Length: 503
Image (cartoon, rainbow, N blue to C red; front, top):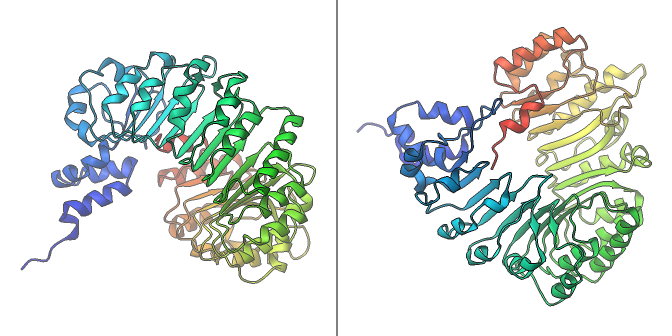
């Protein structure tokens, strides 16, 4: 009896297809007709119905946006749509996607989008509406109340008039997740706080509020206080006044002290001028912290001590103190203590790590089997032992065998000393980084040669992104980058966003 090849099984090929994108998926389609048929669900799962523009990234693979017959034949496979023109409106009467779950709309005039079109797609779970910054758009919210499976929503440059307030809050009360960015919500109408006092949002698990919204800070905090099951929230209240932010910070601390959010695990704050004592109070009143990202705050000794109680469960940590306090704390041994003490830490981003602190700290880190993302400018202080320091630091970093992302860019421009990615300085220790996908070293002074590039291509087989100047000689650096490009590695930061899927 002939042996069965697992790759001949359609469900195996379908599983493979879900893991591929861009040119890798295109290559798999060309194996044979059986592979092509098995991978069709992956090809049509997410589509971009917009005219191709110059410079569209190769990793986007929309089916022909103007081939209506082809789209109709495969509309049962479509689960996610991104559109930036009137294609859906032009063909709305002949298009129905029975399995559509997500739709993202970016239009010059949002008010022209027929929300009644959504009613034919009862399985929708996520809506993403984005207008133009210079001309925010509005639309009728009443039809959206009939989308019973809707769980998440993202609004950017959207106007919600006070006349739509009841419809809007009714929809929001059913959601698990909401992201608001630069919207115009009701203005300062005094009826909104009164309305919120009588509402509760028991399903809301995640709130993201970015940039400026017309909704006052106090009203936004009032709304969040009526979300008792909140697990995660991200808040970047730009460009509110400093005094308003301080007032809201005090209210936020009081709400945490009264256990308003008993299951809160993820907290991202940026642009709120929190003191060391306020950050400590926030951390002391979160029962179990999984993710913490802070920017423009004072994170000092009190905050660090409060963070200690979360070391056993902390998975994602990013600390960027304000300019006045950043160097004092972020180059200290406390950050090394975090790496040495957090066994579940998956991502760690900070401004700077001092090579001396790495070497003077524990020989092994608790996060060695969990850390996948590391971002820190690693400073090497000048002296007679610089080369040995680099070898020892590389040897210490080599234990991070699960690392996928590394950013050692010089964020502060201090240039105290660069971790040099060359073989003679110890790069060969990092042969254990077989999972590394992205490396950034912008602003650092490198002296790589073709030998280093050959070594990287040989040992970092998973590498997709390589951003930074590999050599101080601009022409030679360009030649090294071209060699990496010939192996399909992105070397231009402008290409990164485009190479990612839009959905």
